[in-house]
Amino acid sequence: MPMDEQIENTVETVLRRANLLRSGATLLVALSGGADSVVLLRAVCALRPENGLNVTAAHVEHGLRGARALADAHFCERLCAELGVPLSLDHADLPGDMRAPGAETRAREARYRLLLSRARACRADALLLAHHQDDQAETVLARLIRGGGAQGLAGMREISRMEGVTLARPLLSLPKQALLKALGGLPYCEDETNAEPCCQRNRLRAEVLPLLAAENPRAAAHIARSAALLAMDEDCLQAQAEALLTVARVDRPPYYYVRRATLRAAPAAVAVRALRAFVLMGAARLQRADAPTSAGPPPSVTDASALA
Image (cartoon, rainbow, N blue to C red; front, side, top):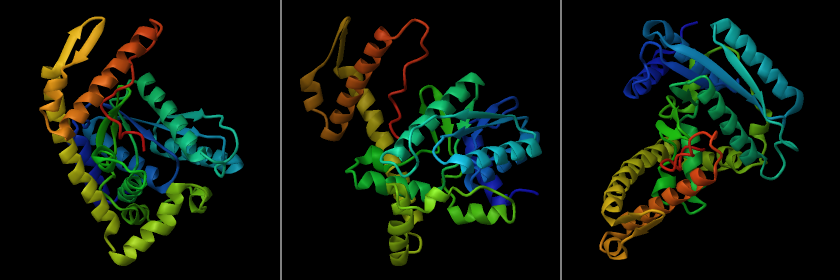
């Protein structure tokens, strides 16, 4: 069944803008089996013949949902067999279940760790994630109530980098309802824990966003738009901070300094970002010095918003 034209066009636009629609490019799709990732995989597969793409998928089973999680993994196997897509299955042996305190965060961190490892192993040009507009609104709200600054409130980016891997979120501008409509009667998996108020994201999705939608039906879209505007502002401030750091930094290995007077003369928003970048660069140096010679590259310090 052909994928919805709007979905396919949106995915194509995002991937083309990132120079990922080129012959021989390897795209790894994170496939949970849920509606969002099924839509993404089908859309990317629709673009595969014309663009000469190598499409592969990865599924992570967290060990937190018992037999239901195994059923999701089997569904992903059947779907990938139908679409002719190689699938890798990874298991994260996490204790407890999704209702345990901190389970959501542990599951997310384990999922990213395994997906990034798979992306590096298959030399993927990008890891594709199925976050959509409603996910973006949840992310921004979660960071807002934690007191996040512009970088955090900019939310997730369509294209970002994490630990040396390019992350692409081609569905980020689309609402959840558009994805469900695109699927029509096609099968997908439902994570029953998404409906339980056991974690913050679920409560934001089930309780807070509906209240905001009652005030403004396009609340999620407007929150996502605000995030995009903040992302532009943040990119500008980061560029200014990088320029400031080049003149404020003094490298005298093994010692590194910043000129305090140079920082003080700059706008506070720029100086704070420059100082943060300087500290992160120092941390990366220490990590490289302590790491065994066989270790891979250090984690990227340029994108704190990738993990969501």
